[in-house]
Length: 71
Ligand code: SF4
Image (tube, rainbow, N blue to C red; front, top):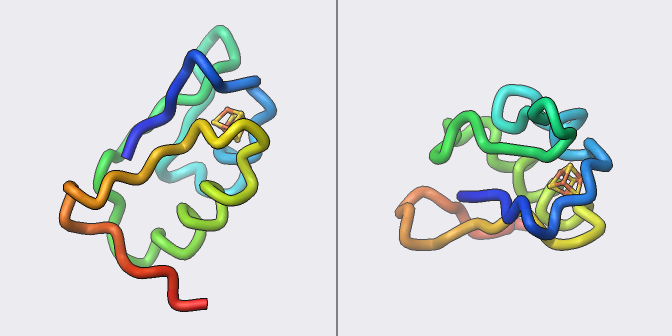
């Protein structure tokens, strides 16, 4: 999982939703603290993917960890 900083607006929804995984840097851009979060965090991570206004949060299936969205 990555954040495309070139798209990030620094709105901060991701850090508010999952502070264990996302952190805004000194420029206000989000970066990923944990590329493969523990399973318990995935529901909020997937919510962040949907809520990011510029689709900057990218989940790569290749990580082998991204669960199916069960909703
Ligand atoms: S929600 Fe999206 S635009 Fe907002 S800080 Fe996170 S990655 Fe950047």
